[in-house]
Length: 436
Ligand code: SDX
Image 1 (spheres, protein in one colour):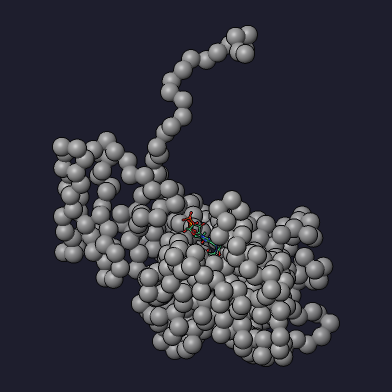
Image 2 (image 1 turned 135 degrees about the vertical axis):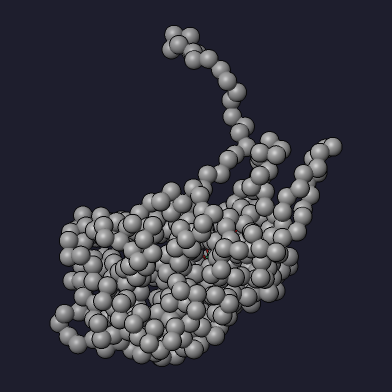
């Protein structure tokens, strides 16, 4: 990590009343510079205050860059559009973990290593029988990914680079297996073991949709769409769930447990749960003629309803992933011969109405990746409850790459924010007899 010690530093000044203090400003390779306020409290006795971290850089990173105004997303400098068009998900995983695109030999080795870690310990099956069949699959993911921390004691010495990479490979390889098991358990079908001859996305479709009674051939168009969906969801800078993983990992916690914490955060409807919520919203709207009523509600301050799949903390332009997702939706519907999907009709009309509405224009609210993903996944045969699980499968590589970067950062220390306290000042205990 060199920006905070390199030549690209200039002086910043903070003035409070009659006092002036100097703080260094670091410039990145692209994007906003940062002012290092780590000595602020020591110098001034003041904390910064930034609930939601809208103006706070929590770390230095070389993994993913987002330009919210321009709608740009780069993984290790490569535009998401090019990676989604030319590469596959495991190539993106290699890039995020190692920082460079793999050579053919490196890719073959990486694919081999991931493929041969895709089975889970057979005792993992027993965890599933403890869940109700109607448990939300994300509840099962949080539990089963966390349970991995009870099995792999040979890859949890986080000071050992080899063990960090083994844990990373295991998580990338096993989350699709656990996700497929969660789905099979919810529909009462037997678990399907991974198939080593299949690529990552085809193997996942096989584990979800094959049954022991007959041959299952993954549709190559759907497998390619699944793979692209994984690429689009792989990483996204310091989003809520990635920040959760970094904070959990900053205490030196077990890497499998840190990823389970990421799953828990992603589940929320404001974050990764939005794809499930967006599809439910489209189904509730039902027909294009009901769109004006829902757009009005979304604009009504007294109504908690929001257009799910719209808006983003960083993108104040079109989410580049949403355009690629929309293209994938059309490819999947065409391959499946679905001519007029009512949900797609509502989605496209809703997008048109919202993008021309003064409220959405003024607040720079555009469709995000979750707006179209649900339509695609539903067409592929996944129940709504599985949508966030698929997001978690894809985001595992981003979480673990960011976790590794944090562990390997020599300036890394436990994350411990402070607060603005507005509670009761000191007061003495009141005996029960004197309480009213
Ligand atoms: C993901 O961070 C990431 O990178 C996340 C993610 C990733 O890859 O990791 O990209 C994945 O989580 C995408 C976002 C999925 N969530 C949704 O689609 C849920 C709906 N969107 C909103 O809840 C909201 O837009 C957020 C949570 C995404 C962003 O919230 P912010 O940045 O805190 O913005 P805000 O809530 O302060 O909204 C700003 C204004 C508000 O109005 P005012 O108070 O200024 O008058 O815009 C309004 C909001 O009311 N607004 C919306 C809206 N989103 C924001 N109004 C109607 N519908 C919406 N969807």
